[in-house]
Length: 224
View (cartoon, rainbow, N blue to C red):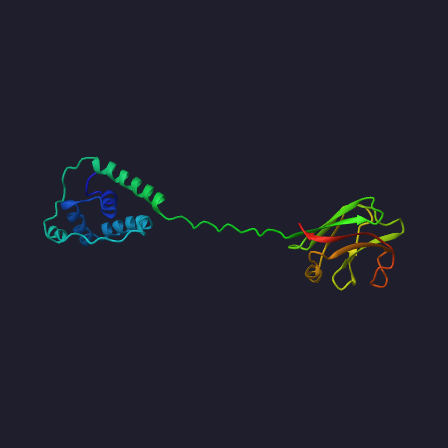
């Protein structure tokens, strides 16, 4: 490969490998040879993305003097520029991969702790108690299977605040654990000290909106 090879010389000029008289000759050739100038520009476009993050440095004043020197049309040349060009390209790519800033790390979501409340619902016959657990963050409420109502009846849950007025919360499952989602209004009324009670009602719940049957379990809410 010789200095006059358009592809090699254009690549060496674009990457800044040429120095001294060789660079001056290549720059004069850019002015005199449109095809060569296009080849240099093509190489610069290929490499431009690797150097976007680095500021340009003005060429030394001595280059202008060298541009006035005669063009050396042919001169034997060793093969070292080929290896140097390959090494320089590899180094530029490696520097680009290592130094180029990566994407900003994604923010780590902050998980808010759930505010939990619990009430130990003691059966009126003192035989056992069950824990009513309320997630005040999501409104989810769960009560384990307690078989609180006989066949043909429904077990209904109530809340009783400082005013002493029972407010319906929902029906418990006839079999298995009971799960319900409280409304925002129900959650606002729940607080430590509020009583939860279960009464036995007709199938489908109290027809009056107030407890009509016996209370079979009750307990006060507290912060878990």
